[in-house]
Amino acid sequence: MSKKDGLDDLRVRRTQKAIRVAFFELVKEKGFEHISVKDITDRALISRNTFYLHYADKYDLFNKICDDLMRTLFFRVGKRLRRAQQNDFDVESVASIIKSSILAIEENKEEYLILFSVSGTANILTDKINQISTIFLNFIKDDIEGISEWSMAYIIAGIAGFIRYYVLNGIENLDEECLNFSKIHFKSIIEIAQNTRNKKD
Image (cartoon, helix red, strand yellow):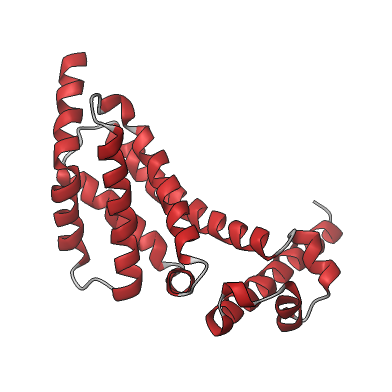
């Protein structure tokens, strides 16, 4: 990569960061539905043309921000899930996976807090979390034969609810709460997975 390419890449990252900071400030102040691209560009001190080089509109910006948050969550949790998948599942390993997701969210907690707290963004973020939770459960779908789609939907909703509660309220004893959540929501799945694996062996 040439020196010029490096400077261009740095300029792009600085611009995107300025847009993102402006977006969150404005969403917190006015709500998502009441901000415009002009509001964002004025706050970020960039031109509208510069904004449109990166994003189609404020909805595209919001979706890409959510996708970035989910990407961080995916890579952090995915590694632990694959590690657990290679061994026997138990409530402790699942609790550890849940805790890793919370710690990944902690890195961007202020952004999650704003999006969960403001009209027009909470439902979209929840949908994104549901989508990533579905992907995680699909990793172990072969090990949980017989579980219904209704049960899957219940578990996915529980994960999103747990994350939302943590972001909005905090959790004093994270290890204990993750273990309790694992026991309540995943114990039956763990037993099904263990039985399925035993049948295959």
